[in-house]
Length: 299
Image (cartoon, rainbow, N blue to C red; front, side, top):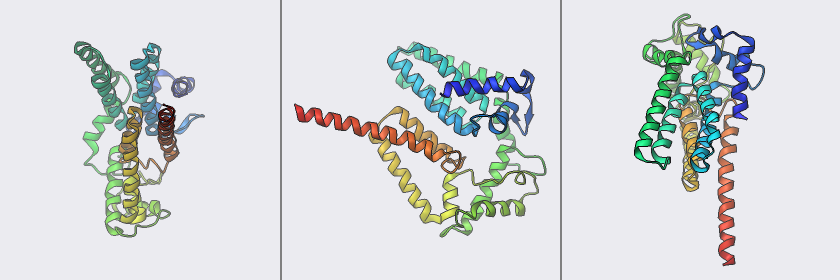
């Protein structure tokens, strides 16, 4: 399904736009990413959320190649990689490259010289995508140029907006450390902070949350709410270690990292997606244990 959706994204884009539109930008966001997030008539989703799904499917297809020699899965891996880079979710692009590097180094059971060749090919492929996929280089240059420049007027991008959100979130958290402000009030209080501290247009068309789920819980419910949430995360990690599946490690690590830059569980059915995968692995593990227990009883 992820493969069909990825191909459909490109087909839909070229149905509505010409090739030249790939290189059109608004606030350092290329037209393709903007199209997928705001305009596409089906499966409209935030690029970070969809690329998280692509990371899982990429890991799944890569393991199929390694364990079952299903070389046809290469087309899926390449499609997922291209789509991930085209959607320009910075964290997930880096995560994708590091994940594939880890797989090559520790999952490939081949001679060292072939691992070196595979790593070189991965490096060349990543550089090629940075050079030829529209907007990739700009997104990383933006971080260096904007992280210490607050939004001003119409001059803003995803980096300095996030810095503004973090500064306001930190200020609100310090003022409401024990009890929080309440989940229904968080968005409006952050908006008030933007109005008080920034002479910019960035928050007028869109109401932003914390873009950090840990900070969202802290602001909304205070330190005790955050401690309960951290207990939930620790429990998830403990079960993940017990299940000991590479695919689940990918999902849990990716989601926890994304929670540092997005309100992942709050938006776009993020909690449903994560719970669906996690409890599928947990249920599968329990079924295997029951099967092994029955076998032992029959011996």
